[in-house]
Length: 270
Image 1 (cartoon, rainbow, N blue to C red):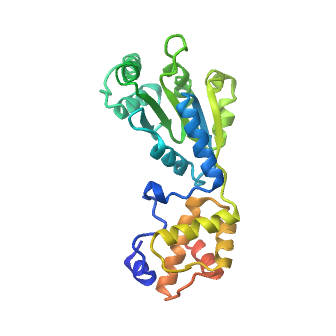
Image 2 (cartoon, rainbow, N blue to C red):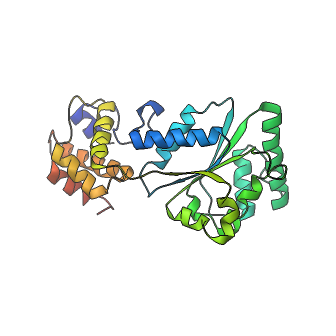
């Protein structure tokens, strides 16, 4: 956020920046329930599907889970570059596990499985492999996941896989070629867009946490913000921040409905 906005509204930080401390994450009742269900599934060593439209807060749920999981008992392995063939995918997982990414696909697979077994037997640590944007994963790589999590004839759940993606990810899992993976998933968690009430609460919390001394958005502006973004919180961030910048430039102390509409047309969302 530019200095003019911080000065104009007496803010200590950008209210809509993504780098929030865990305590400042916005979790309404729906998202709190999603975090609780995700934690329950992971601690029970179940694979999980987390789905939702772009920008609704799936990563917020993941970050809240990360903050509540014991680092002594769990090791989170986050992979976001999943648009790869099996060999390069295994390399990505090796890098995330601090293993050498060199070797054949079979050698990389064996190295990953040995590492997971060692984490369990030597340290009693459960690795949790989080695959973000999993709807983009090629079918031939997707088909390796249930094999990667297979230990001792599928009798020992040493690795938990969390698949995160758009709703079409669930549709892909229902295809016959991925049935083996679908039947191993123990929980499906959908993160919806925010309601109008939650959008307003979200914006108010973000500006208050940033140090605002009062309301920065009029009630009708919050309604307009929700209508234009459909409750996708990432889009709310973009439009709300643009509106604050326009307000600061115009020396306006309270963002109204018209200013939100103007801000919307200053973004790629229009």
